[in-house]
Image 1 (cartoon, rainbow, N blue to C red):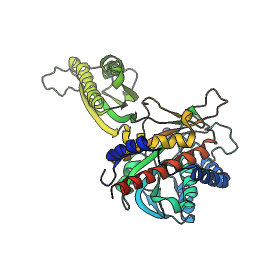
Image 2 (cartoon, protein in one colour; image 1 turned 180 degrees about the vertical axis):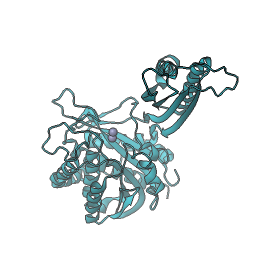
Image 3 (cartoon, rainbow, N blue to C red; image 1 turned 180 degrees about the horizontal axis):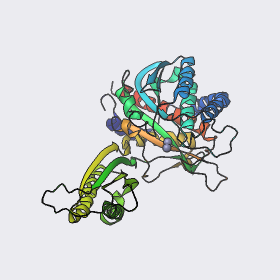
Image 4 (spheres, rainbow, N blue to C red; image 1 turned 120 degrees about the vertical axis):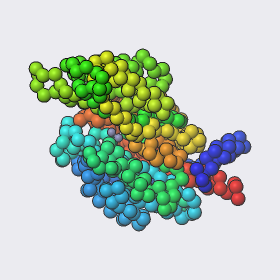
Length: 435
Ligand SMILES: [Zn+2]
Ligand SMILES: [Zn+2]
């Protein structure tokens, strides 16, 4: 990345580690200052979270959330750009000292789910719920902006807070999410040198932070197959073709493909979520359409799956003289944590929450459009525990009863403040060293 020495930087950190203790900016006095500021603003931030939770909005329709975010950022005297990619908001916090710009991405959208938590601050919007914790992400970003605004004197560079719409997908026919934000220049003016993102994680306890280098989440592609009765081959003699039978063979073959033909390390999850065709129970269908998704952890597997699906379709349609159409659309890329950036920031997390609370995790088949950013510049994405220690389990993400532990909010703010300050300080040390 031009102007940002992660590779050389990693070498410098080895030198620093060899000859002295790590020189992170968040020393004990700074950590105490962060903790005091969080305490000072905690209730206000919890109130913001509850307000957002009560008023959830779907992707590209986050009008009220967006207004709340931009008015809060403006009150902090930040440079604010709103209505980016429909409802996105970008707030720039300039530190007192020169330096690079680090981004933090928070998503703001809710899901079309009827809330069943019974909480006093449950959703007031029927059929819409913050069931993926984006209300928490937005509040942690705002809380960090509030805290760091009072610490500008020690910030060596800029922090760009990116409040993004439609992470869960835009309404049909509309663009949205990370790619729209990027198209509208969110990574420019000033250029963002590295970006941080996070997600609440119900499988980890409140207080724990999960990180891993390399690929952590899957890429997501979509496909559509249509089996047609009419053979495109002119020499094929006309005969009655049962497209429903062929489609069912295709489904079975696709589902057994992943377990049989892919190695377990580079596996894939293929789901056919929609099948449609036919008009009456006693008439064979002219055509059957199947729509599905493919989740993979690397591009090689992605390409392999694309070809394997077509081979399955061909081998099931040809013997019957049926024809087909097949469209495979590449969607979200796998989410990749920059290994050097992860190595640099791990000590920062340990400093923030303690060695025992920083854990690794294996790659997950979830998807995240944060990969759009981390594809373009060094990215670091972590998972924040939201399961209270006294509970054996909590409802998963996208459940109508998902209820993350609110105590994760001050912890998330603390973690983020440490990461952002250390990241900027690290680069400032690197640049000073090269002068
Ligand atoms: Zn989600
Ligand atoms: Zn989410």
